Image (tube, rainbow, N blue to C red):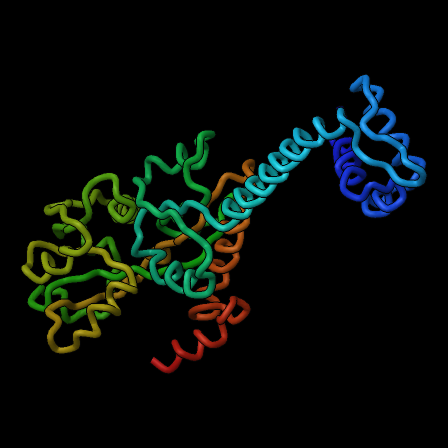
Length: 317
């Protein structure tokens, strides 16, 4: 049974005129009449009595219209719920990251620019990146990853930031007076780093290995404790430029000295990864473009909603 036959029947029952109902349904009157005749033939009964140029529901039509109204109302409600669900899906995406610190500022400004988008965020271990991106049951739409040295933009990968790395030492350390250093000069030093499995721990080990030595991790701690351990002279640590700038804001109160690494590969590449064989939600594509241009503008891109206003506010700080 064609659903349009039911809609034509409903229109005819309300207007009680074939010509008027046909106009409302944007169909020719002969085609409209033929559709109703087909419906009556399928049901095996006539649904209307013809009275001159008017029509009215007969006893069978009055019975049938009640069920047609209910059925079409249910179908319309179902269509509306599907549309709402589709819209809701377009307004949300999942973001996994090996370190929330790498993306927090970008994400905060993104949600200022697009407050109606819902971001499900969580941290993952580097070893789980592949399974997250290839999880057919869901997983992450986009994952923020970090790697030592240069990354190439490839299908499913977009580099958004390149961060220089520094060595953090106590101001009482013999190296504290230096401004720059090669990693190879640190092979006899004891290092402080994140626990095994964390992205920055992998970066530390990979860079030291590239400098021809195996790093001696004397102490493991989480990022929030790292500089305190350096200050206590437990060891030295590699840190990002962002960590260095944040600590230097303390001025004379800081007990940490930072040395620029002279090695050509002494930086961290931050990238967004996704599964190129799986369609990204609309909100995820929006975030991908936003984050890609974020560091080019030094903050919120002006093309984002409210971007110019927010960019002005940031420059006033």
